[in-house]
Length: 138
Image 1 (tube, rainbow, N blue to C red):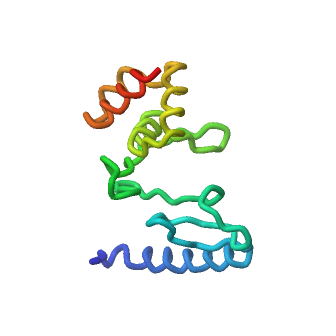
Image 2: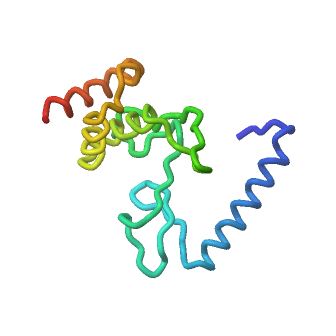
């Protein structure tokens, strides 16, 4: 990868910070692993995908068979000191993953009116088809 000289110092700092972060996690009994092609942090004493913290990278497919990569996030509003993911981004993520629990989450968001016409108008055709499939199965 070519890195602009302007950013080289920042990349070096990021690499150093990542190393310190990994060391701190290790001391706390948490390990970084790649399982099933997914990056995650797991409890070293009781490792398991269900309790792991999964890393999702924007603009990359979580799994090769996904119809789209994970969306690049919009600006997230801050409420009470917490960054809140925009509903449109969550809808795209859930429709991309399309697991049982994602379909349930989509139904829940749709049932309370969170999936607006504006959100629907800005999702891709494959994701629109998935949304229609969920709605048809109710």
